[in-house]
Length: 177
Image (cartoon, rainbow, N blue to C red; front, side, top):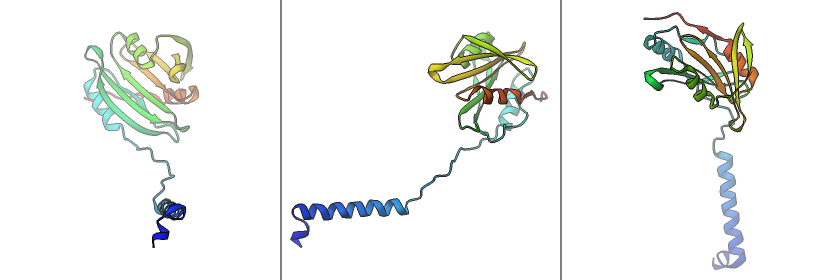
C-alpha cells in the first residue's frame, strides 16, 4: 500500500483521482445554458403611480417584441416629486429604461437621468420631437421629451433604434382616481 502513496507515483495517482472526481462532477452537475431574465409585471406599479400624481401617466401600450420587462419601481425625486422607472432587457439583450416625473426643474431631472446635460441632436418619433443625449464613456444613450406637466426619458445601453422603438410605444394612460 505504501508504494501508492509515496513519490511521483503517489502524486500521479492522487492527481488522477482528483481530475476524475472533477470530471464526474462536471458531467452530473446541472448546467443551465438557457437564458433566464426575470419578468416583472409593471401594471400595478403604473396604476399606483397614477393614483399618486396629478397628471396623466405615460406607459408603453405594449411591450416591444422579444423584450423582457425586468424591473419597475416608484421612487422619490427631488422637491417631493415621484419618479416612475420601468426597465427592460431588449431584444438584443441590452438595457433600456423608461422614466417619468413632474420633478422641477425638468432640465435638472433630464440631466440626472441622462448623466449628461449635452443635447447631441433631436429626433422625430410619432410626430413628436425628442432630444438626443449620449454619454459614450458610460455607453448610455438617452431620449428626452419635456412636456408641460411631465418629463419623459428613455435611456440605457440599447442602441438608438431600440430606444426609438420604446419611445414610439409610449402613450398616456387614462387618469385613475
